[in-house]
Amino acid sequence: MKLPESIGHKQAVEFVKGVLEEELGVQLEKRKIRIRWSGPNRRISDLQNTKLDQDQSIVVIVRDKVSLTNRGNLSSELRDKLSLDWLALREFQATKKILVITDFQVYQQLNKVWYAKGGTSWRKDRYPDTEIKLIEFPVFRNNFAEKFNNKSFTISQLIGAMKFNVLKYDKLPIEIKEVMLVMLKRLGYLRKTKKLEYSAGKK
Image 1 (cartoon, one colour):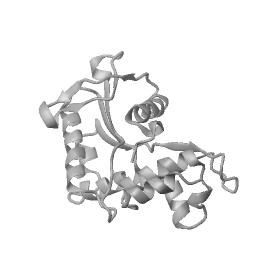
Image 2 (cartoon, one colour):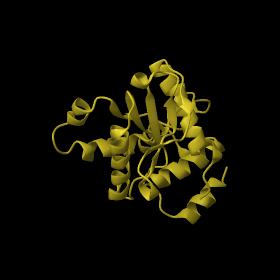
Image 3 (cartoon, rainbow, N blue to C red):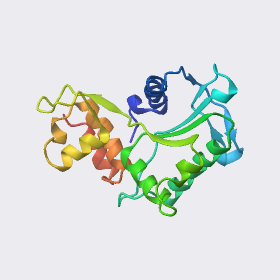
């Protein structure tokens, strides 16, 4: 299934950049530098703040192309990948190191396995400068569901609304349907690609 351009990595990084700039009160630059290692385990930054002194610097990795198994679990491969992201950031020389995950369920699953031992805060207490942060992407402006007060919807909110049958997939705008098909497949809800492609073309 072809990935809609609206949810590509470039668009995810741009969205995260805006959220973090507003939250942190700094200007971030889209910049790829090697954080640690070479070869297949090489870790590259997506965002940096290079205009501050070294003791105030910020580096960010954005993970938007994440998925769950068909049972809704975090695969060992993805868990290890995200763990390596965190380890690479932890060793990098910067004041604030942030690993951004853009999917709510992946973030929740990672926290579940990440904190399985030693309580829920030991990593944060021991390494307060290295953070795993949820910034959901994509976010859709609500111009299609008047009965909701939401100004916008995240993927997790739309999935929740569909689960409780208060919002139907068929009522979504076509451009949102296309994105939802990709995200539902990533999150293990859908399996048959041919069926998904046929559904995406229906209006």
